[in-house]
Image 1 (cartoon, rainbow, N blue to C red):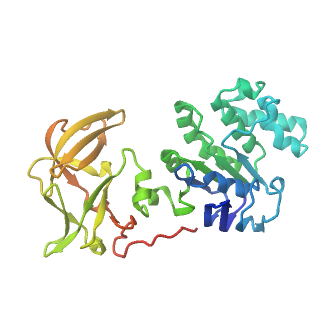
Image 2: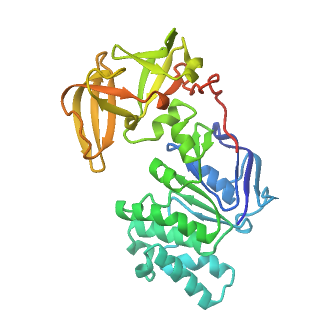
Image 3: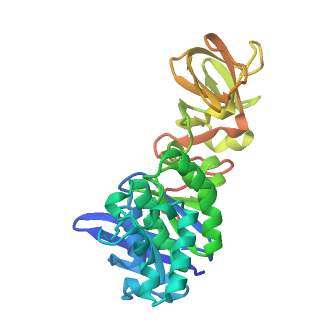
Length: 372
């Protein structure tokens, strides 16, 4: 295993700054997920760590050693590229074996290592096939197997399940953490799938324009997103965002939703009198009976069953849409007028102008690149 540190990394392509002053640290054996939209610089960051690209500024330190000027083959890094990068003239076995062959590993050990990782990734039946005879999912797993087989201390995985079918993708989400733990590597894992990020990451680094917007555990990212941009990326169905202006009177802090007073906790004091956006996760809203204190009146527009849950589209008296999610089989209205209870403790409040979350009990969090 190894530690990995990035110090003030900058990367430009002509006039386009892709990464600007990016810093982070990954602990021994940790799985850090890089998550963000396409074009955020995730793959570029991996290529810089691997030594395929050179940074314009900053330092990359692996296990205490500065990698500036160190060629890719001497960095102790394994990488599964997004575009597979398989040798077309070699079969899957030979492609996977290349890191071991480069070390002049004995033939029996090469075969044992390749067959072991191939079984784990369910491609042992196609080891004699060349890349042109493999499906995209098999190519992706072959590239992943090649990265894993040498047990490198640092492992870089660039969206390795992107081309895998839904069933296998779900299985691999369950199996990969164990597989990676067994290998003992320090891992940076890139994905655009928030469920994958939540399932695999010890921590998640959310990337935005030219840098890292927030780093935290999956729970911290979901429950305490640094801004609206991050809140929108996590959750299915997506978070409800409603313009509000919190007020305070003798009874406490509140907002008006659908003409109804909704109480907020005292910790929301920093939001009082400000133009804000309230974030309501669909699963924190619940249907209640008419007359329930604080119940918000809505009109049911549509209902969609989605296997494990049912999603309801409702509309407030002011015409604003609200999504409500409840476990499948849970009773709830499917038409006409209904009433919602809002879990005040789960309301997220964002400054409307900056988009930053207003931290309970303190001022709005400043917009800055996260470090860890």
